[in-house]
Length: 206
Length: 144
Image: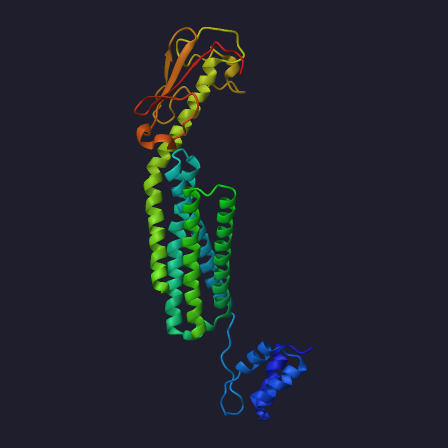
């Protein structure tokens, strides 16, 4: 069975042989390749009369990208999780004075935020400067994956929050305290979702 | 748009850190809370020592640090409870109300009126003054 490298090679040779894109598409579909696979393979070569066919830049994967983006997202997730903890502990203290555990949660959360937020900002701004200098880095596959993993986690968090709110409603536990705590999750997860969706759309446009 | 979102999220983080530190206080406050928790634990140990559970009815000691009063309440190696505040090194205040009723008190580091319920408030603790708490008791009940 042929793999994607064979497919790309076939498209290259077909273009060199002077076949049109429509003819190549028909042949590949007949051979059993799916339309997205065919589209991807043809998109790998620039539509120009120049011969041999000119390859388009492809998303790259590098260990350095993995380190930077994985660290950025780990810091983001840790910071967001602890921001929720601090806000929820503050809400708990607003409703019940005697909560010694809330003090510990707030101190731990503040310690995490004071560490992760400056690190996240430094990593993000440093990356933004690099991307401005070298737009080719936007094609990093790891970067795209991390953006979409971030979106997935934020969406799942919002989903879980909605389920918990509906469950609390059905069980009669939907208090003002619960709503405020659920609202804190919506603001943080929603903010992260919108931020990364915007970053992802920018990356897709370029 | 993402710049505005980033600024809003950073504002939320700043608010959470400021609000959190405002509510729980700084390192000095945390240290004082921990010291007060130890003082309360010391008062509980002294309360048990003075009640001397399991012993026949006997007169309360005149001085708090009389370790012959209740040998059964000493630790496995014969160690006595802390008669003194470990921070100020002053003796906890023992008041012998009569032959069998007593009160043991400690001066806490935090002003209890200001920290309200967020310091450990437990059953049997009586708030005597601005930052003084006491554990009253008697040694007439001899079972735990």
